[in-house]
Image 1 (cartoon, rainbow, N blue to C red):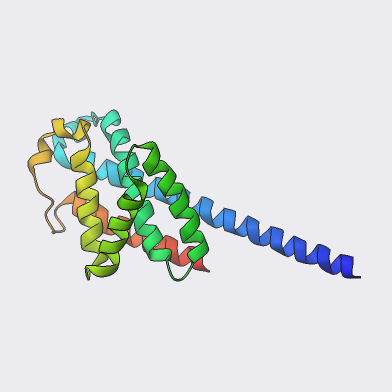
Image 2 (cartoon, rainbow, N blue to C red; image 1 turned 90 degrees about the vertical axis):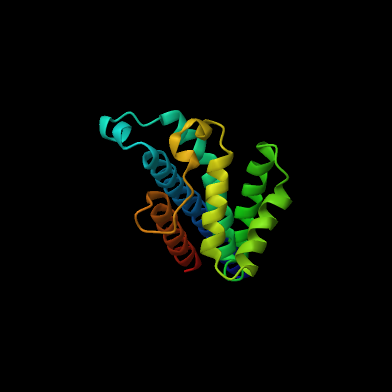
Length: 179
């Protein structure tokens, strides 16, 4: 009888591990989708003629994907912290590895952002600034005309709207991951 109970406990633990893995996979999939949408918004913002003609730079969009995905990952870590610490820690671990692979100092990169989100009053302002800095730092982006235009905190700036939508979607991902 105890063996059956132990077997049942093991099965529950196994199911729990599977659920954690599934939640992490969901978070990563959503980060990828949202980073794709965000990088596309940045690329499309600069040149309406190219957008109209279908000549948007795929290499540029791809080069923006990873830095924006990292920003989204850290923002999601912030959103999960305190409510889903284990998932936040798993996501932080994976993000730190990616940051190291990029040749950056992982703890400094992540902690700087988490500190801003927690202490600056409006995490969305921090997220907007970090996304813009990530794009500004991209070497391919320096060749675009839109590089000189600062992000406008208005609904007629496609980048600003995309960042707000991304933040809203990340908040939904955090809510979905908690339950």
